[in-house]
Length: 351
Ligand code: AMP
Ligand code: MG
Image (cartoon, rainbow, N blue to C red; front, side, top):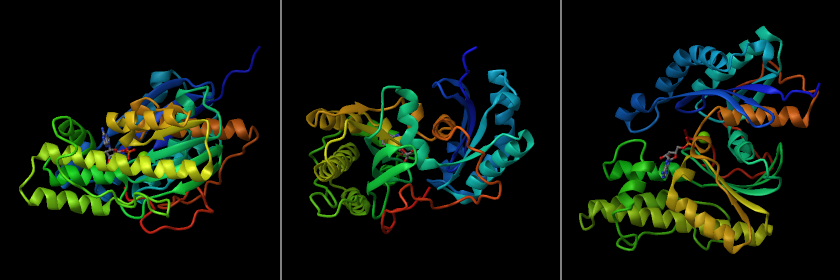
């Protein structure tokens, strides 16, 4: 009898997505449920931490039950329970982590405390069995904007981060200024299709700068001024904003590649990876450096539990005798992937 692949139950609750998934070490997603809280947060134009934590608490247990049922499995069939332990909105993280601990305790299976960013960083390997280490990762989500050299499971070198806003946040704020509602990224992308990206002159913060980081606060303020001037069409502002953001990303990636040498692949993860213009810009950048370009399917790019379960699979693969993280482990609102990276203003998670 050949050995069957390990199965990990994953739980994600760090922001406004409650998600549960069962994933195997041979890259099969056996079952998956995801509940978005968009409707609850929409009236506030952003994620409200207290509302998020309550919604996770109400939804998580029935979702875990449903996922087990969808897959026709019980906890006996599962090899580990992986839960996001940070970074994120602490109330929500605690709900998911405590649920994971309870399941681990009841079943006697190991708990894997997963760094949410590690989930994003390794998710491309769930979708693509050919993707080996190392690779250059652009992580662009609602709370993060980082360039990482992913050298192996547990070995991440942060090459750049944002000194103020995350890129997804900049899209969301631009959407708010333009009256497009929340979440803003997809709405800005749609409106940008109708606009002229050269119509509004906007800054490219830190472009060409000696430091490696990102900054989007000044771009956001410039969007606000352009809107308030009343001189521009909203679609032109959206298109010009998107182009400015893309120019910043490609400039920072070019710098990272110049300084850290070529890597075999460029990978993008996080919610902003859903943006087609961002994707095509990255694709041409990768091509011009002879790198493979890997963009996981969209549902793996935004927050999800399959990536958390997968990070658990990777950990078990790396440490076959892993006995589990301690059950008194604390949820961490901030948890840098690269402990050596110097602290940068605004570089932590916001939402
Ligand atoms: P995440 O934090 O990974 O769940 O990603 C959510 C963030 O991605 C939000 O800030 C969204 O506005 C952003 N986002 C989602 N879709 C798009 C898109 N098509 N273009 C730009 N940003 C997007
Ligand atoms: Mg995320």
